[in-house]
Image 1: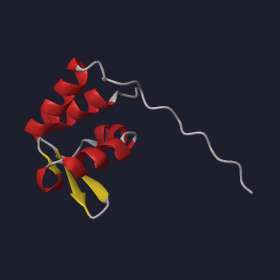
Image 2: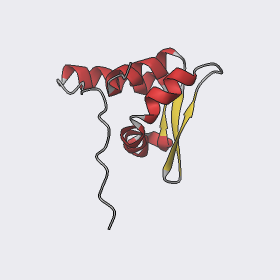
Image 3: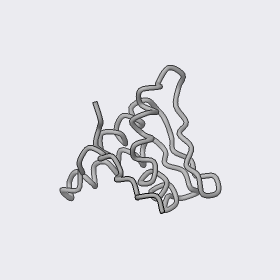
Length: 91
């Protein structure tokens, strides 16, 4: 079941995971066996990369992830489940 960005941020933090920016790519560091969470996080990959870009050292630690989730929730910005991107017509 797709999760909102806030739910994904909380799930990564609860798993003691991190999001780390290397160059222009965000990498998810999680314990083994968390494939479902990896798939959910991919749905929010662009948002996670932007957040990591703004984080100190390009690193979203569990503490930072929980703070972001709380701020988004309190601001009424919890978000919706990710939607499939419409495909552009081929020229």
